[in-house]
Image (cartoon, rainbow, N blue to C red):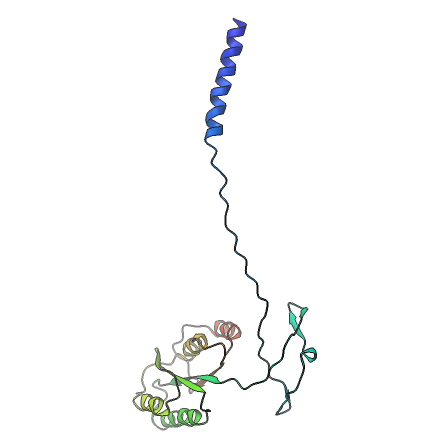
Length: 203
């Protein structure tokens, strides 16, 4: 009787153990992706007062990454073309003579650009509209400005945000210019959020 009880317990233990082992699924390997950068380009402008300084060598620069000095391997000089994004206020508060002055200012700015520089035009009031993409065509920009009619509220900060996040080629400098009377009446973006955005862009 004792032998039968022991055997029954052994069989029960075996039956309870086998399904548990059979149910174990193989451990799934989660893929790991790693990225690294061997070379990073840093754009700098060195000036002595208003004079641009050239002729510096790599060992005359100090680059820190989180306080850790990085090795500067090469220094090259050149003038990068510039992409200018102009945001023109066409709200109700910018009418008549003021709007005409802003229109002329945009035209003068574009005529001062060099041959390989480009200009993008954004018009804004309560809405922000990309009117002309990066171009060297002065006539196209002036035509778009000439047809702009003033009206509505003004979203200066929102227009700045759109201009700042507009894509620009990495081999070109990016400049944002806003022509406005600075009377912001309808932006949804807070000043601190705009400042944070500006600090995260290359413009």
